[in-house]
Length: 59
Image 1: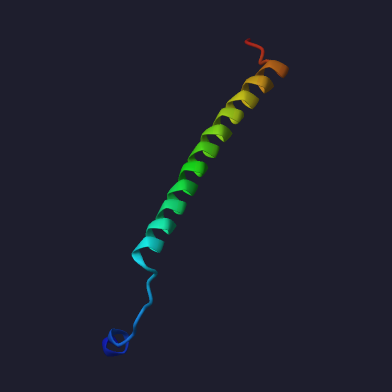
Image 2: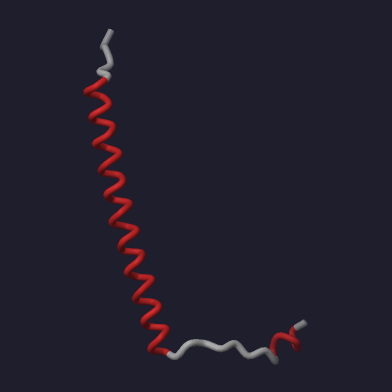
């Protein structure tokens, strides 16, 4: 019920610590984006190499 929740206190880290956490998470997002791009590049390379190994005949 609303009264039960209105009396609860939630501890939050200090603003400086929140900023550090946000910076860390942003850095991780950037790394994930770069790795995703690298993965896409490698998949395209693999696709090209597979096409060279097993060319499709045009009939």
